[in-house]
Length: 261
Ligand code: F6R
Image (cartoon, rainbow, N blue to C red; front, side, top):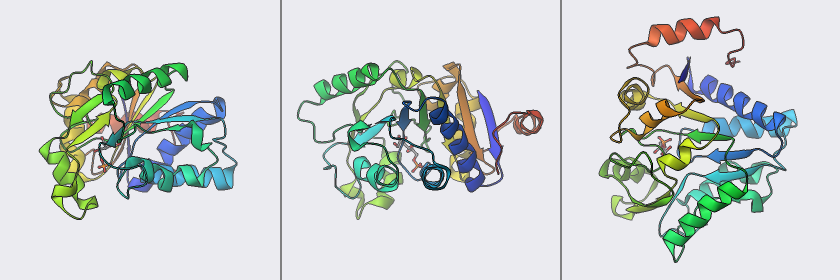
């Protein structure tokens, strides 16, 4: 896995956005896999800036989000559909019909999950998938012990995830216990994976994912099985990496490494 470390969250976000923008410029009808949460907000802000000031068009792009809470309507303040509409889709020129987020109110969830997988296949597969990482090492809502071959499905959330996400809800009890999530196997089929992580609170999970054993106890470690995975980290999230010195050394020597400014 390629590991790129930036001094600040802003620089990390701009570098990841530059990589995404290059993919969209090279393939205007690219299929983008997107994530919610705090981590990708800087990336989305930069993509919006590149759209408004740099002429980057998303008019032919198709998007698939990783996950959605079960039981929340699409316009609920904490639904991931609402998050994506507010944080990105409404500020770029992607046609709303090209954006896909699992439906948290689907009546037949297994059928909806199968259909979601089929929609990804019909779109030609995901060209680049953005991923955040949970404090417990999860990607999407693939909590510890999720099968590394898992597909899009109904998933219970771990206690730590519910507690981490309670900051967005009025009360801990309001955080949904179930979500629909792409599986680790689904994610690994994307042609390129971009893992984003910032803050000290992610350092242990990042080190386990990048340098630890491949294990379902840290589903982000499955990135080690992917031929085109890149981790964009800020200084704090990289804090527990044993090979930190090497990553910094090689990043400084790569003539074509994404630049942070
Ligand atoms: C969100 C998602 C989650 C988050 C992770 C980190 O779509 O799939 O795996 O990426 O929980 O969340 P933040 O970025 O809020 O720390």
